[in-house]
Every structure is written in structure tokens, then in C-alpha cells.
Length: 228
Image (tube, rainbow, N blue to C red):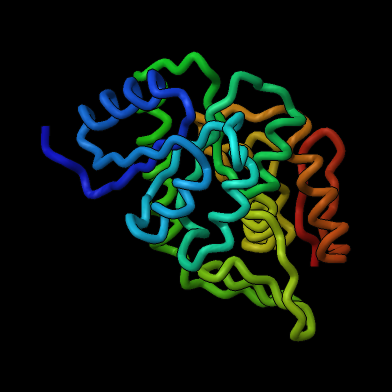
């Protein structure tokens, strides 16, 4: 099979899982690297510049959440897709993971066909995001730089976790348009990703708290809009 242009890093402390995932993902044509813990993953990321990282949560030294936070601090790693491997699928874990900068969750035991489908969908979204990453949006006193994942308010930088930034960017991209929860799910996470029902509401609350933006309106029973 012809090798794709995408590089994937698999991080897991269980040798059997590393072997199975390495075999199936390599067979699908991706260039694959592996690491048995978060510390070694942090050493590899700046060297191989992966397009996607599959990251186990429960690991020694650094757990998956800590590793994800450190990766997001690295130059050029805001657009890298990070998919968590987890034995848990509750809202609380998802919220922590998305706050850390993750993009998706896949539950153990891993179904290789489902995993490859999710990888394909996430990389497709990444390609589209990079294509449009040079846009800068200015609304009132706020400037949003999509490429840098940066928000400026009166010259002061405001930092948001990746998913919260993407939700805010979506809302301000069409002022006064009401985005339903289903629409937000589809545009931010994609059809192949399942997140808990409370996830969007929690993210919106945190966006308001961190940025101080008062223009985000809740449309009861429908969704949200950025009102101007």
C-alpha cells in the first residue's frame, strides 16, 4: 500500500497495544512512530513533528493529560491532532482532556477499523483547518488569530484551551447566527467523534469566564450565538 504523507505517534505503556496499533496503522499506509511513556513522547515530538498523536491516559511519569499540555506548549504543535486512548468514557474525563488540548477520545479495547476511520476523519479536518488558518477576525476590542490560536483584548493576550478557542472562533465567524449544539458538534468535533452532552455547555461557560466576552448568548433549547 502506498504510504501517505501523514506521520502518527502512538504513546502507550502497554507493549501489546503499541504492537497492535503500530501494525494496523502502518498497514493503512501511515508513517508510524511509538513511545512507551509521556516523557519519551515529549522527546520525539519536536524531532518527528507528527500530524496526529494517539495518547494513552494512564501512564507512568507523565499521564496523557500532562503530556498533552506539554505538547501544546511546543512551537508548531497547536494544529497537531491529539487523540486520547482511555478505558473511561465519562463527561468528566472528556472535559479534562479537551481542556488539556485534546481533539478526540477512543475507548479501549480499540477496534482497529473504528480507529482508522476516526484517524482519517480527523486528518481531513486538520487539512481544512490549516488551509484556512491565516484568517484574522476582529470583533470590537477582540482580535482572534486562527493561525496562532491567539486572542487579544486591548493588546493583552488571553489563552484558551484548543477546543474552547475553536468554539469561540466558530461563533464569531458568523455574528448573530444561531449555532445549534448539533452544528457545533459537527463543525468542531466532526460526525465521527462522540462527546458528552454537557461538554459544549461547560466549554461555553469557561469561554465566558476566561475572556470576559459578554456577547455569547444562550438560545434556550437550541444552542448559542455571538451577538453584535
